[in-house]
Length: 261
Image (cartoon, rainbow, N blue to C red):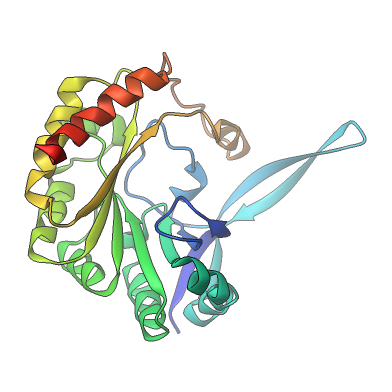
């Protein structure tokens, strides 16, 4: 019986692919990005976490376990509840994390079940995973949401904890497939929020133009910082200053100009 370790199943998502989607968050990630806002998704096992609740002005601390083992049938049963929303909006299911490639057997099983039920599937990935598994996932999923942080390997190791060679290798393997890809770039102040970094990412993506459906630049935010305390972890670095709308627009234009040329 195939089981997966989940830490959330979120309904009515409109930011994880086309249409209204159900996002299944799988626990475990080989990266440890300094700006991560889902730290509860990094550790590949269930872990204790404190939650804080206020009632009548009093704060109560509850102790919970983050991470629940579910069978493929149990997860699919939850997905089926939202079929009407998928059908009316052109939505589907997104498998996110953490890094879903860390639970390859479970992920492939879910992709097959969804495909057999004509449910659109997307996989939100850092691209850091076994190349053979990555190829299988790209064959069975309808779409990938592929995160790119930087093309600079030294900076990638410093800020995510892993080399980006495997990530770029898997990314370029998509040129041999027809899968649709949404590129996601977290824009982090002092890390990649400059024209040089964005131009390097743009140039690295040129071989994938036939696959890329769009490129999303995601502004840095501090949401999720309380989770670190709740997990007993040190608070991550705060990146400053925040980018304003004009600066974000200028960075986006780097990619727009490329596609229009």
